[in-house]
Structures are given as structure tokens and as C-alpha cells.
Image (cartoon, rainbow, N blue to C red; front, side, top):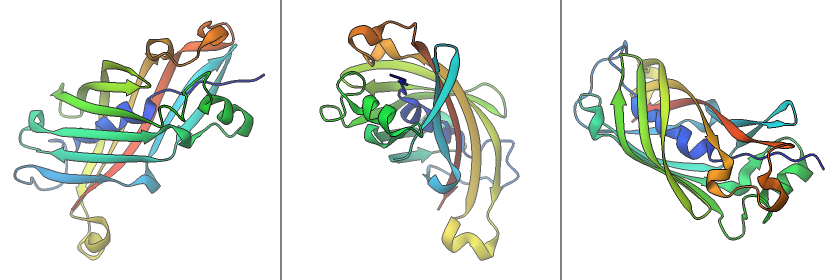
Length: 209
């Protein structure tokens, strides 16, 4: 059976919205903590894992984000993300059902995964590292997510009622080991067919109201 494991890509990945309002922005600085919301129509939270030698990709479609960001003091920012594991989509119905089963994510017992930030550290004008606690099933591990700011700008006045004051875009990528979270049980703990490393691949667009 051709199977694929996706892991907590979405949860960790959405932490990259912490970088909103980078000093490289062309937009004017805002004061204090602001609320940013993810534009799901222009965002993608995905993963890739090896099946034998072949990388197979997937997405999580259903997630909620609570984000506070202070552009002057990014260390005061915070983000909490909840992902519906059942929204996993690898464009293969049988494989997706396998991922929801007790052999992998155990969706009925653990319907969500979460990420809660603990810190954000700027490395340069366009690069950040967000650290936080990623919980999948009953395991919580602190991870780090490198972030690149693609840009931040003021929204044109005639679009602000719908889009808010500012828009920002980010990319992030990292790798986690699915076995650390107990995802893939029994013979699936072996990595010959399905690899251990899961590559997280994220593009996020967020709006400040």
C-alpha cells in the first residue's frame, strides 16, 4: 500500500507570521501590539516526506491562528495555532484515510495539533527564528522555525475595508522527525518505505486590521 506521513507542518509553520512588520517593510511603523490574521486563500501550509526515494507532498487545509505582534518589540509577540489533523490532503483518498487512522495520526483520539510560541528572535532585517511548543498526539516538543520575510506594505486605501491596514508575506522551511511524535506505529516506525524526516514548507500572507 502506498502510504505517506504528514506531520505538524501547519502548526509550527504558522509561527512565521510573527515576523510581520519587519524593519525592511515599505510600510509605516505601527505602535504597540497589533492583531494580524492569516489570509488562507493566499497561504499554504504543506509538507513533503519520502516514499522509498520519491518525495510526496501534502497540505493541511483547516487551521485557526491567534496572533499578536509588536513591530517595535518582536520579542513581545505571540502566536497560537490549532490544526485540524483530519484536513490532511495528499491528493490520494486512500492514503489520506490511512493518515487519519490509528496507525498514524489517530484523528478520532487526537483531532488537533497545536503550536504555541515561546519566543521570537530576529537574526537580520529579513530573517527570524520562532521557537515554540509543537504538540502532536500526546507529545510536546520545542522546535525552532527559520523565517524569511518576503515583504510588508500598506494596503491601498480603497482595499482597506476588506484587507486591513497592512499586508505581509513570509516563507519558512524546516525538518522534523515524525517518530519523535509517535506518528507511524507498528511496522511504520521503520523508515524504509516512509522516511522519518518530514520537510515543512510554508508560504503565509497575513493582514493587520
